[in-house]
Image 1: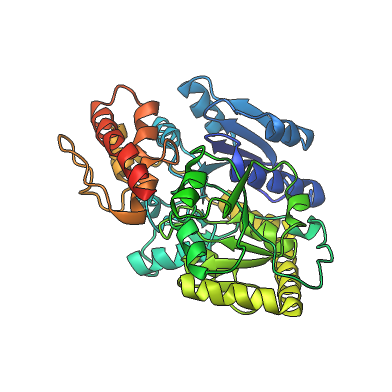
Image 2: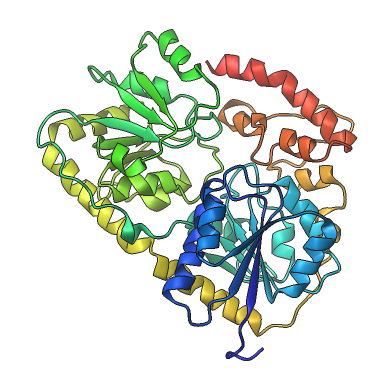
Length: 443
């Protein structure tokens, strides 16, 4: 293919919800700003989109959006495009799609929207195939290198954040020049993402009059309120629910206490970046993904335990000018780092190199198995935790919660997508038996 020819790119994605819809919108917006060598983009959703906003906005930017009807359509569309980019976070339907593409000669790219540090892991099959793999956080690359060693992946591995366009984020507002810091949390409120001991950490700081506003979908209605009541602090957390206008909401905070489950699956941490871009000072736990984003003592604080959290909150309350300067540095760094231009040109280089390569056939079932239960097993941190014919051996503590999710590549998710797989059904029933008990114990 010569450099003068137009070319086409097919994005295969399970859906357009959450961060992936936003990521694809960023790529499409980049095409509009830098049209030279921009592809004709098509998005193929493996399940019907639940919300139409991303579909509407993509089509406004000239991107065709379709929902898969038959496996034959998938194969035909993949063959018809010059490059196929899979948006993957170990969704069950992506494994099925790859199985259907086992005989199709293609040029492929995999953009991974989970960190892979914990369950769900990135399948080893990704490192055994020849196409580029794009990770969304530096800590994911470090984990791959530590596990496999340099040069032990067949295809090239890159890091490109799915967060972009922050140069356009509303500028920070002038915040009050005195008084205690106003505190909040933005993001997922489920225990697989948010720290299950979030309330306990806050109580342990012994900060007088401590109140934190939570913005996000409450997947376990009433759970956080009940937990605060049990701790004797019923007014500690105020759950406001899903937020339609995030920039406006962030104007009301000075500090975001962003404590996540140490075993969480997140990677780009867009909610964290939104807060920082708004001039809100982040306080995060010492997890790899958050530590990639926050420079301790410069653009925010990284805390190891409740005692450190208490010290940081005391500093933020007492030194208003310091928290303002820190918020300004955080905003500047996010706006300079997570831009449309940087993301666009990084992917352009990958795609251009791939266009010079011949198409190849990858027999995915040979790499990852041909049964849905094998696909699920490929994402496990401990492959011996789920054995056919046996009850699952679930992890203890904070690592358990990812297995209790109804989506996010859990066994329940796989069982729902593949109802005829008896092994998955048995595993799902066994995990369901512990689900309520685990949530009760967590409270």
